[in-house]
Length: 251
Image (cartoon, rainbow, N blue to C red):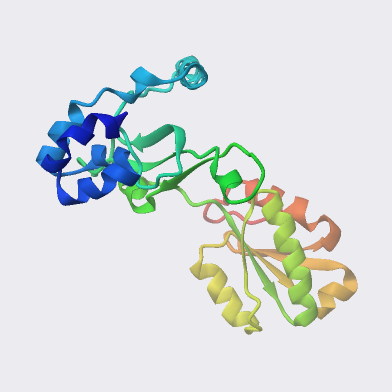
């Protein structure tokens, strides 16, 4: 549709738009050239020529967004830089932070035919890209309390393996974990545990492994206790969920 509308004005288009007219006319809608913009604006909106299947898909999408209460603005001339998209394109924009006019956080769309065109199966798909820097700018300045951290300090090769297993078990339970597997000294690892703001430091050495336990140092309460290795994940989660001790308190 766009190419048919613009073809009579081909000589008036910019050089770049003339090249796109043959292979990707939709990109002319995104041109920054004033004359290109003027001609593209006069083109009929693509929503006016949807076939029955595409219109049903589009109206269904809008209906679902309305049901979810998602605010959106229909932009009939939105285009993306890649030409394999089909049906819906979208951009996510922010109204907060310090982005100003550059408030698009990300964008993408459907590309239902691409996998099949590459020799694969006919699998519908959707994808998007996000600008992480823009997301951070949109968040603005926030005081976010860090999650309590558990630092695992293994002493020896056997302990590193056990520490890796324990770290995975804790992460599966939602615990933020830092593990030092560099073979550092205990003093060095304790210093690092403090530097990363760890609440607990779990010490694992050959002696602890032989006994089937770990030593858990509460760096906030300045206390230490042994826990069975098999029960350590649950005990550590419980300790991290306990309130921080007040000055002068002990456990």
